[in-house]
Image 1 (cartoon, rainbow, N blue to C red):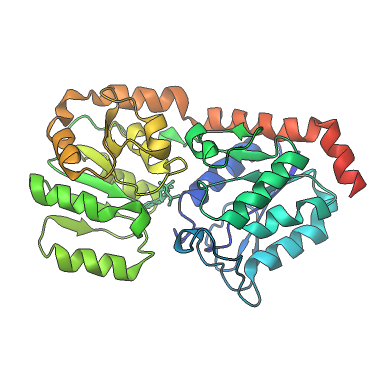
Image 2: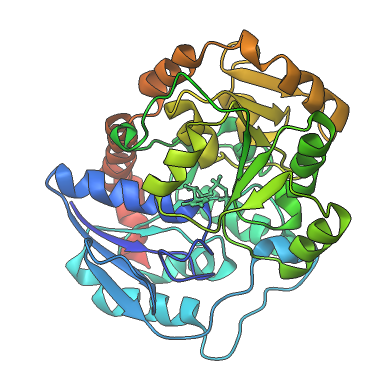
Length: 361
Ligand code: UDP
């Protein structure tokens, strides 16, 4: 297959601004290339990946969907990188069999019927905005099975009749198992209100177990508020680290705290943690609730309950770290990810009904 991957428009690849989409796109691209397919990635200028074929497109970044209200209109900056990337895709589409959209944005869905090549849409978040919900539903109806989600619980927020559920996967060889953790906890992700870092800092404060924080600061004000509320040395911010450095810290932690205040579509950091043998304590909500086996690979607790997070943290020795690693190996390997996506892409290309639709437009 000749595949054109169009990246998220909220940040250049390699900066962390794109959240889990960056790693997901990287892993799928790598797998497709390894399987003999041709891949070209289209991404905002200033992307830093240099080992994959990348076309860099200039323009202003899109505002993040999480910062908008459900009823907000669709907004685009002038000289939008999203529009520029899709203009590029339109011009080169004849050179590809399939275009894959990684952006959680209205425009690529709206443009779908105007393209002559089929578009697979990988949706990276749960339902957040009415205008986007509506256009996703429309595309799902007219272009069956071209909408992909990571988990059933994420898909349920859109209430579609037909979709593909693709989970996620990582290169397990990059995450080393560690059986002897230090007395420390981890929190990983974009620092932004919906990810709930403040709850994890509260747990560190109550249990007096130091917290290592890694990830991109997306909301500076939210971060400042945390620093002002908890002026102590129980948490340490290490920055947005490359995978290898990140897993060196993560694997030595007793647990990963996952504290989302929204329906997390998947939660890449959950499987990265399990791959290191680190159990995950999470609110019973969104993707993590589908991935973590309560009492086996971590604990699922009442959403937004700090006291339940604390209780689970104090019981963390009940979890066998080897079981965590084995569960990552069994379900979330790069090969499994590659097979799921290859199958999805082939299904779309083999769909005669869809081929006719694209020809008609
Ligand atoms: N991450 C990273 N370095 C860090 C912290 C996080 O590379 O120091 C990456 C992590 O590997 C994961 C992503 O940030 O792929 C966070 O993705 P997740 O799916 O957990 O949440 P999202 O940001 O998409 O809501």
